[in-house]
Structure formats: structure tokens, C-alpha cells
Amino acid sequence: MKQIACPKCRGEDLVKSGVVKGRQRYRCKHCNYFFTVLKEGKNIDPYYVIKALQLYIEGVTFREIERILGISHVSVMNWVKRYNIKAPENYEYRPTYKVLNHAELVEFFSNKESLNSSGCMITELGDKFMVIKWERFRKNAL
Ligand SMILES: [Zn+2]
Image (tube, rainbow, N blue to C red):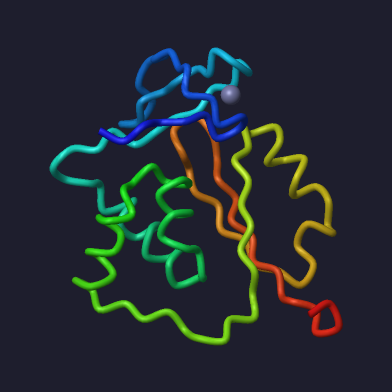
């Protein structure tokens, strides 16, 4: 079994704290952060298969997808093969992501600047939300 680490501090000293919508909830003993990880069984909910493939197309690496969704990068690689997914090359967007609770999500979108020159995808993630944001590279910034 792969080692689960706190997304905030990378701590590995975790306490199980219930199950939320098919995701195991943990509390980090080090920083007290709550987060959820997909319970990986034989069948992964197609919801997560689609999310993983969307992230792949948007230029997120396999390791990052593993970290974001809690699905092993091997599974994601297999789906990419199975569905014959090809991500476009010479990518002009840079994906970043945040995991926010509902209040933070509202705060994030109340700022118009959050959406300048970018696209967003919001995905429910147990008791929180993941916001993946793609910002266009500024040509002079490269
Ligand atoms: Zn932590």
C-alpha cells in the first residue's frame, strides 16, 4: 500500500476520521489539517476516471494527478492508454490547483482577478473542493 501523506505539511502521522462520499477522511496529527483520499477498490468511480483524464489533457503530470485525486499514477497511465488520450503539445497554460472548503471557494471567486486570463475547473473532493486553474503564460514572462 502506498504511503499517504498530508497535502499541507507532507506529514505521515495521520488519524482516520470517517468516510465522506466514498473517500477516507484523515486528520494530520502534525498540522491538524483534514483531508480525504479516494478509497481505492477494484472499481474506481467513473467520476474520478474522467477527472483524471481531464487533468491529464490539461497538462498535469501523472504524479500530480496521483497527489490530487489519490489515484495511483499507474491506474491513470492505464486509462490514458485504454482510451487513447493524447494531450496537445506546446502547452500554453500552466495548471495550478488549490483544495478549498466552501467558504474559501466563495472567497476565491469573489475576487475577479482569480479568473483573469485563466480557466477553472471545480471538482468535489469529499468534504472539500478542488479548484484547478489554468493560466496563460505571459509571453514576456518566459
Ligand atoms: Zn499536516
